Image (tube, rainbow, N blue to C red; front, side, top):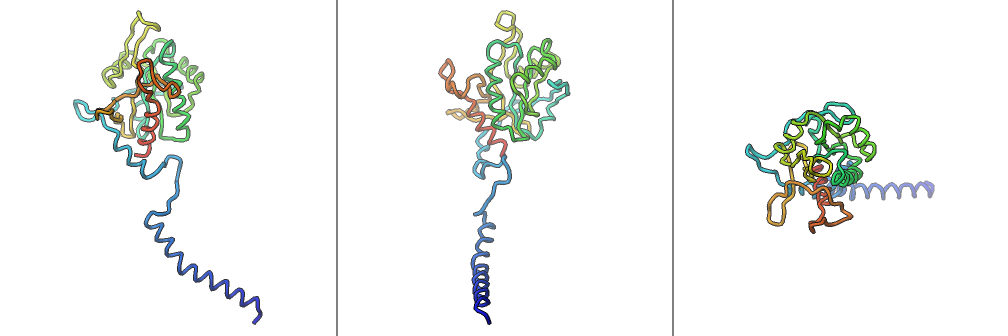
Length: 247
């Protein structure tokens, strides 16, 4: 037998021994979960998947509060209802396009959030105008284009004024009103509501253990604190969106 054949036999023997000793160990590690791989961008870590448990539900008179039923027309002329958001984590706001004060700041913050979750098909935003007489789908479309709103699950909606105000004030308890004495002719809360995939309103707790319910949407992460010394909540909102995406 040639010398080279002895070499081949030696190599084959080494491979056989490696397979007998190490392959069962590798299989065992995989079985026990020691070796993992990330399946998609929406999977952060096993630890994060449990963190959503610290996001509380908001109690109401008939159990944990959920998104009320709604049906409006969005900036693309499509009818959008609460069912279109089922299975998605999303943020809710009330605004109007001619707002000269807080709305531009709120929507710049939401655009930054949009950019962070650009690759997640189960994230969205629901924006309801409180000036539907002026904010037609065409006006909302121009507003969306101007702000760079591109997420297909971000709908800027208009419709019956009474229905919108009922949704804001009675459905979400997010204040909105027409007031000719204030700048812009309307006043409203600058808060965002966070909704989970099952339509429940969720939030983190404050230092006293009470739900914050809403997230202040005016102050940016760059500003850090608002005029009253309150810490910005956009970073907290982003953290909690991540948690719910993995719930």
